[in-house]
Length: 517
Image (cartoon, rainbow, N blue to C red; front, side, top):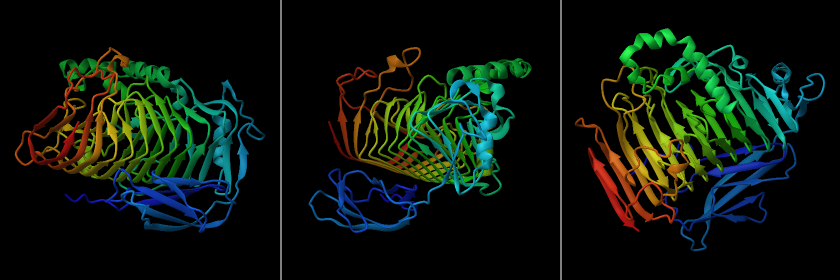
């Protein structure tokens, strides 16, 4: 089976003192592969991961990075790639706690205006700095060529009051465009018919960006329920199409960081989380990197970690997740709007990530614009509910193709139709799920559903679930499983079975080669 990938196979990221390089796991890589990375011809560093950061470099200095590769642990290294790059120059600091901004990091003073003035003053030669302290803020807006640095011990803390996230902006949530509350950090303006309007944004450091969490989530929903009460009454029995009354009201929530029509976006090194819904959301954006971040949102409904949505060339690596929903959810709009806008998500790379709690990596369910070329490797999702899940309702239309997962641990693999989030008009045809490969994957279920509110979670009754749509020509097709191991976790909670369970329904050309326990 041939997976159509490699459009986005490596990248280099720099600050004034660091240089980070990452690369795609080669096609012939075995679980014992090794890499050597060297800077300017110096002594190479040997490692198994597919990324490395050189530190303590001089600002504005040029460098050559070479990566060599041993595919099978034989000790024979061959050249893989060579890159030339320069570190960034030193930028002038705009410390929000100093004059003329005078923000107060006491966790109580609302600093929205002060921090916004610093962001407005920032250009390519400056960086806005959040120093040690807890700086409370409402919605902030970043323009092109802005760098925001959260220093160690510094917290950009979002307010828990919905009024602090007004005015509402045009945004997309669960695949539908509309007016939503502003997010804590807002980058770009949403326009599905145009290109990029905000570029070259860096948000980094060793501090935290935290939202208003459950309190903001609930307050937003309560206020919107009151605003929509006449509409909800008019829906009558049709409210059942939305699963529950709060579904419609919940769609007005902002995110923690919302990027619309952005290009060249980097978010690195931070603890991020507790947004009122999804934490990082990228829509109609290109060349987005999220690295070495820790995501926390366990108590938040729809508390996804990182959601690429109708976006291209996205890399997520070196991150840890403890989320109230998916660690990463790949989206591209919802029927029929997503079919008409027709902006797919393509070239997504997720590697060296692990989840302590959450649902896992999802592709869908809003994928009506299409999703293709997704690579996942070196990830541990054994403590997630669903592992890697490709999902859509029959109404969606669109496609998911060219998905590859290699050398990972996961609780399960699911490629199937779902019945939730299914309100609204549908596409003329079901989705197409095709051309996927899972190689050198260990299935081990460490997820504990007793820690979920209510003590249980649905749809967990097998380890590999491949179910297409009951329409001729829309079966799940061309899926290969190679070298799949199955381990019974000592503390397995989601099943009493002591063996691997596989379900196939409405499928075509699904291949298993090397299944072991």
